Image: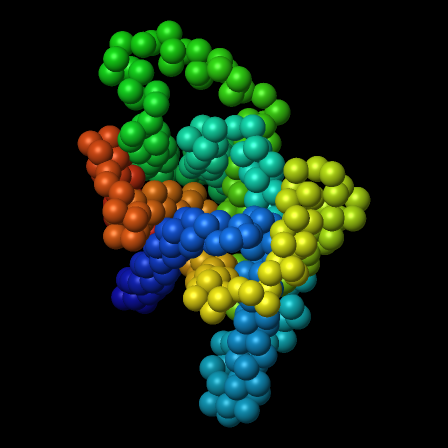
Length: 373
């Protein structure tokens, strides 16, 4: 009976973790419409400047919430005794720096890579995390010293590997929705497809593709390593450290671009924006200013601060590969928001790809939790 109760408790915790993690791609789905709006403001906001704004909001908010929570615990005589070890644990500075750096460098590599890589191909390359994460997790589990543990690829259940492949297939099919490659195939222009994939037309595979692949690897490392740190501290403390790391590094990058590399595209873009905003601030109308501020706060609070917290909370209960499969549902939520806010519609390929991703998610969520951990 005790074993059954323990199993039921573990399954309930895992289900709660899955539900929390599902809100992460849901929140991420609001990012694209917000960014489109911010970029439409005159003068257009550079990407890294926008990042500084929402990372600062996320960092300050998470630190503030953590201080409030700690003060409440200190004054609450009936605090749960199980939280005592967490209270005595210092802030996970090392974990915050490591995890925050993965996200920061992944974002930077992706931004620079997008300068030379078409958006469709970049989206496909980033989604390689669906395959990279299980291999990284299997490798890290396989290097353990416990001789009773399964080693290498066999450390993950077959259902998980099938789900990864199905989800990856779904991502590919969704990317074909309205894509130029699909139009070429339907028109019988196989040579054009081959030329595009191989790098014809000036958009060939090159350094930009390598940067996008490295960004996918950085994001994958974040998902796998989060599994380690999430179990050693509170989600709020870890989220605060991660957000602060990203804020500090982004501020440092912007300062470096405008001082050491002012003639580069990224540096000159920031300088021109600074000059434009300082000369037009007085003439900015409230109708343009307040929505921009609102966009910064929404992104800082929802798509950044909340998702960082939710990932730290959910991955205490859900394995990295399963968590990453949940994250691959972002195209589904993005499509829903694009339909609701921008009037965009999915084609047949979009629905087929979405069904594959949903099926992969079902495979993971319906699996016995004892087989996943």
